[in-house]
Length: 316
Image (tube, rainbow, N blue to C red):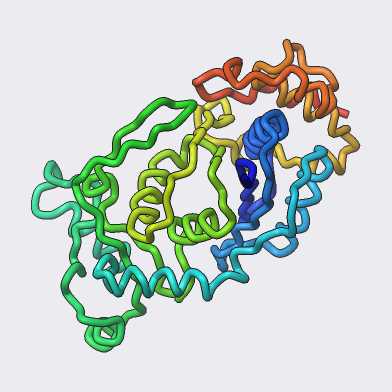
């Protein structure tokens, strides 16, 4: 019997910061504690936003912390044929349709005629409108994306950290894009295809992706690639303003700390203290120290605020 499989799945659209690192660290500790297989998948499909050399830097950062993985790295940019086959299956069963709506079209439709009626969901403008992508392109003069149909049937994400959460995809976004109008697979479809192909059955990630789990469960059912994985959606690290870490909160990139001579043990100590694994104040800790003490139940259900004291503890 194959062991439980999880994946670390960074996206090279920017450098890894302390918030990303904490989620990856907890995923890694859970995996090693439970004897899971750990895969590395680089989610490099978002072409215009992928930064030069970001992949190499991310992998270097994670290895510097001591995180490792068990098989050759998977690159989404090399899996286009698999995504296209899955799209064709969804088209064949009538679950996907071509869409030529611009973002402005969707915003206008969602706000008319009465703002109070808007649900924030795609209004289905192109559902049933075209027989094929060729017709859609010819009649609209626009590039064609593909959306998958959703229903009002509730989808329950039985998350093992957040607890069960119910989504109605018809109101929470509506029919969603699975292939972009540049011809590349969208995040939701690519993740489902990749997880199924690799046998990923344990997904640990930030709780900003909890609603994505519902969309991915919907796609898994349409593609017939069950059973659904076990999910753990963890609270994010935020700045003092309550927003996820970004440049506005200062330079919290792992690469910047490496370049300043901060040791990985100090980063691990801070992340461990922020996660309830070791008591504050943050000092140095090894990966083995954290593994010995790790208890997911000690992690707060609330977002952790990165304070000036935290970053000061990493001063050279």
